[in-house]
Picture 1 (cartoon, rainbow, N blue to C red):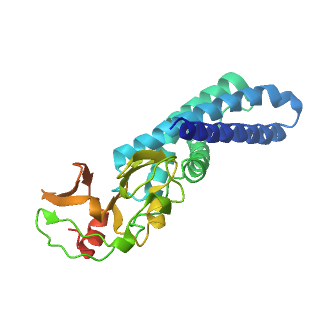
Picture 2 (picture 1 turned 180 degrees about the horizontal axis):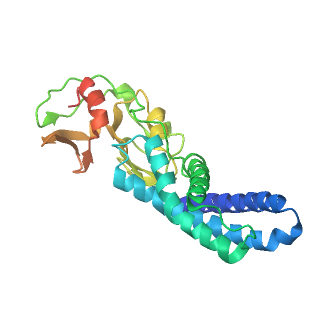
Picture 3 (picture 1 turned 180 degrees about the vertical axis):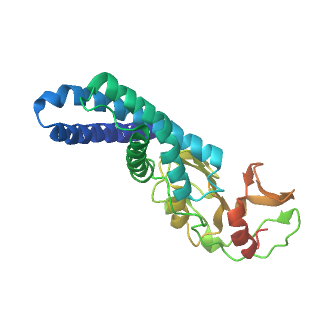
Length: 270
């Protein structure tokens, strides 16, 4: 866990340093001369660092509030950039007026907001695709389930497992260190993937969509944007008020995303 967090922190630190250096270089060239370097260096160091930290919190807040299983990634991506630009616009204008104090004055607020929004889009793109590796375009389940027969009652029986399609930990391209056994289910925890096997559990810096592809052809499938479940781990499926929940043999309750119900129904899981 510490190794994974250290790796993530290193990626963010690298992104902040590279972004800061790039913005300083562009600004100094536009201002024309080394005389502008101290002010621009201070301004962009504070602005970029504060911007990154805020965008990390805003991105996670948007994903949690809007619901990753109810909205496509590109919509959350755009919402993060647009919402995040509001507070950062005021901060950037204050920093420019306090530190840089441009002779020609500040641009209109609406123009500052548009500029910040464009920069936020770049920040979000780097954050999602290069740092956290959060998928923007992955609305459908990525793995192919085995065909099983089950009813569509409120408490549907669990699908049966084929011995040839057992999802072992060794099939994952990125797996928790020291963990082995047969995978029961997997759950996304922010940018980490928690893998549960019959021999324990562990964390890996891996996307669920990639893990589902690794396990394509095994007996499991994605049932939610944040969950993958093995058929052998299911005890029954509960249906209450149009909401379906998978109950595993160890008592874990796994929510079923509405966008995945069609695939589950076609596979005979619900």
